[in-house]
Image (cartoon, rainbow, N blue to C red; front, side, top):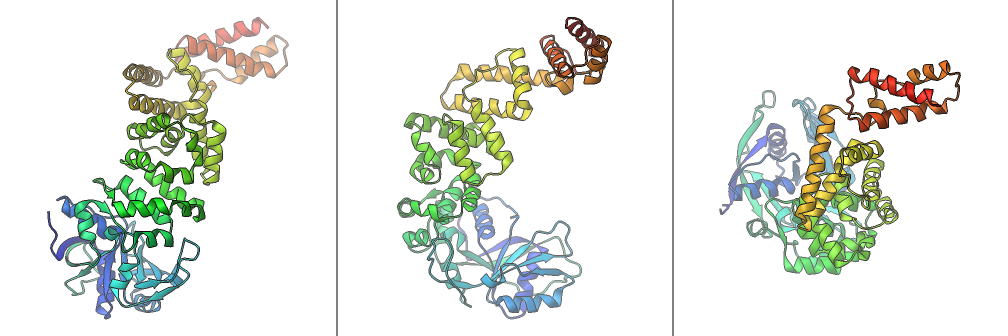
Length: 457
């Protein structure tokens, strides 16, 4: 499908209101960035989407935007975070669960001395110059309203279908049509300016649907400047990497750009080519769970190496804990019996057990190990049956408590409290081996078993 110079776009009323208010005050105003890219890409595929995030660019200076919207304080709240860089956040007040909308003044950026952010920013009234500073052609498309009539702010519809003019000066539409990620201008200059654009290119290629390939010259420059990633804040790289890892096309990206990944995680250089191929191929079979995909990515590395890598990249405690638990289990034998499954559930809990099976199924599929996949499926079936039947595998599942054991021990003149836990552990093992369920019917049998254990002390 071909796009003409204009297009009809479905806009939330607050977005349309902002565009029209700035237009009515004589300032050029456009939708820009990811929302435009995603809308036009969807149109090319003959489908429709409604972006969650909306970015607006304008020729109005930040102070002028503040001044204008101070007259509309019943409708919008202005949040001046980022004003020194030309960005204001606008919160619509009349819509429930409204998202913040960013308005940025057209700008030109100075040199990037630190390979991360421009040393200076200069405002401009020229949209073409503003779009020229952007990373990729598909992100350098703007759309402006063709109809400038103001609608009633007091009684807005939820959405409006608006005729918009496409402003494409750098071949963004062609990039969308060819499904290519291409830098605006010189790709070497783009990546030298800001190395995080390397991660953004890889992330877009991993997550955009349908799949977008990275254009040849952009690829070359990306590889050339990969070492500049070392100058980027770990948290920013982690955020991009996580989104990439959870993308539908991460396998293709990881197999093609191992040397770039190794700048971030040099630990993977110790993996053999064959093992790296298996790990990255397995990612396509994994659920979209970060700890599962991290455990697969690092599979066969030591727990110590993985811990060092994740801590270096500033992962949160929960992700770190879950991923390391999965890595620690990678050498464990599969729990092939009902009792073995319960014993593992007792050790690691349901969340880690479920993710452990998901990791191994993905790895088995990557190696075309059909027999192993079948065994893992059988383990899953048994596990689900254990949960559905509410069979005991934790101390908290037992229908007797420590107080019951204390009473029995006192009757035997035993006052060593350490015996309470020991007796409960034996009772739990009995309940697990007998496939007892967590219900009142099992209480008499467990009390009888506990009494027998106490009597033998």
